[in-house]
Image (cartoon, rainbow, N blue to C red; front, side, top):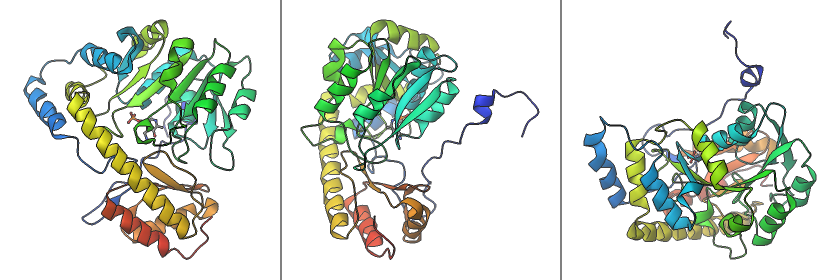
Length: 358
Ligand code: PMP
């Protein structure tokens, strides 16, 4: 408690809950959707190489990285903004477009930072329940848009439940939102998608200037510890977001690492690693279903056990087996795909759970 004045919207915020940190040897951390492997060697070398120059500021807006990303995505450099993780950029975007009392429509359950970011921007989060298959309910999301809506969010694949939007669903969402309302499509886990029916918002960008895409280096690129992500947006909106963003928001080693991660041979290795993670995901989900668990389809590097009120007890059961997972109180447990050995341990722990598996 403090006697100093805090904005009521901030005082009322729920705390952002990070995944538990591993404590001690033998404990497997499957709680934060990170990659189980260290960054590729050329990326580590790039980080080390810039260490001696750390007395100098990095490029203020990360222009070299911005240009590399623009080339990769086939967009103008004026359409790319980099920041201190995609979560910081999502906050900057909301701060840029929302005024006090305006509305943000978002799917729920989804990434827990979304309603927090909306509240920090002074906006009201209008949550739209997922379907029974744990997918976005696109018609219901469109029906939730009012004249107060400034932004509609989508998360594909959806953290924490796993399904991704098909190209058809994505097209329906983007086409159905009024052109003066921003549609943010968060593609943090897109690299792990293997279903060819899944859409990529990048394909819709040219026809929809109100579309904003969030990407991150934290997942497939194995750089969660360095904090770097990007937004792709219409140039005028991108400029406005840049004016809100923290100056020098991406550190020198983070810029160097992200640039190295975009080199063709590193991208190839990342694609191979992502395919291996996806194959492990499919193996584990199939084995869990054989054990009687009701697991929604996942296109991310994680899977969801929607056990409702038993979430805390199930997370405790995994913890007793030395596996840290992420409980969502009253809803379910999210487990990250790890190495094959880690996944086998998770499967063994799941098999020994005595309670309900739905
Ligand atoms: N979007 C989604 C859907 C996420 O799950 C996460 C991280 N858990 C983020 C964004 C944030 O990523 P970053 O590390 O780039 O801030």
